[in-house]
Length: 184
Image 1 (tube, rainbow, N blue to C red):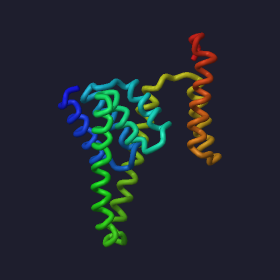
Image 2 (image 1 turned 30 degrees about the vertical axis):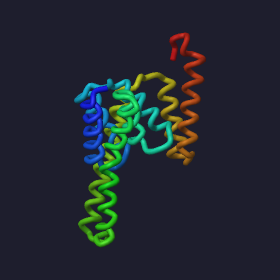
Image 3 (image 1 turned 90 degrees about the vertical axis):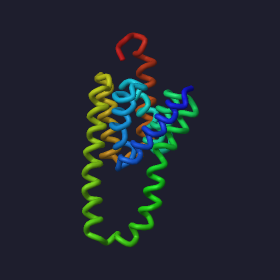
């Protein structure tokens, strides 16, 4: 495996980790753009699969996604480098901010800055939802699963872990029953 690819993975995810606020879901559009459009390491279908796996496995989505992208791109070493790249900026920034924020947490400017950051993060999350929705295969069952998951989590306050397990199980059973017939 070329060392340049591993270094490129590390630097790419270092950049994603350093310039994304709001966590994993806000990083998904950046990961998609860098990995699919700019670097052409993977395609949009691969990213959809990786995001689905990253959401279904324990841990933060961005870290899981970086690990899976690194693994698919350059094996175990790629997984380690991509993961370190995406984690390192947050670790360093949080370490510095934790010391500084205590002195300025009551400042109006800091409070307004966080208000603006939250609005921007919401926009990035909505873009990720829109991008994933556009590239996902559309089927009546998919809409049913999506609506059921929304109702269960948003309205009935069901734990997201159970919803993810249920959706995965439902999708698996559906594909086992109808997948061979070409209906699902």
